[in-house]
Image (cartoon, rainbow, N blue to C red; front, side, top):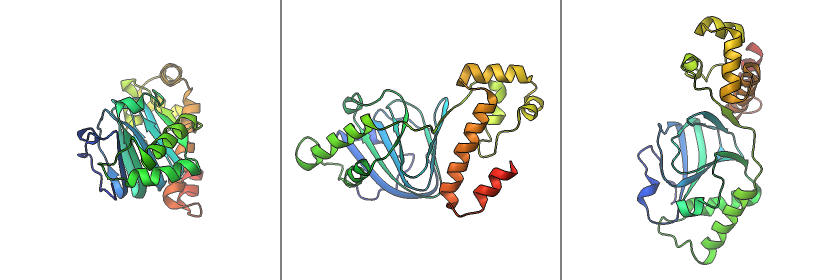
Length: 233
């Protein structure tokens, strides 16, 4: 559908077609926590999108897309202007795709295929002709795309809630976190290793890198804000 102003109230499950596409430019948009039964491929064409899942943080800079299986609660936050494409597929089509959330590199072919799919009318016939070919190419590209390291596992321990509530900031040092939540460094280390598979220092470094990528996407490669942010923290 051509240029839909998507909001949290948009319900892709309300349509009968096997594929529903959206093309939109949004600024400072927060979808709120929501869930749909269709699988979703969300492609950030320009700008950066942050997706929060139950126990993962997903970052989508330009040229990346996130595959989100149906039934998973998630929230998408877009800072400044984000030009994105979103394709929702039926549960039957989603069975051909990964059962877990994945961030993938968008190839030139997948990018070319997503554009007409995102702009297709909701009543499009996806079982024959040009659109059937586009759909087949899209599914094949998603299946074979290499996964990207832009998923950050999040701990569930309630003591770390203040840390997760401030992910716009650089996570504190281990010593500062110890003082803030009242748990020893050994306890914090065990929590992170058990719940994320990473030690705290590894987790903190991965978040630093993801945040840097996010800021570069927002400000541009020549902007001073990302560099100053990284050096100051």
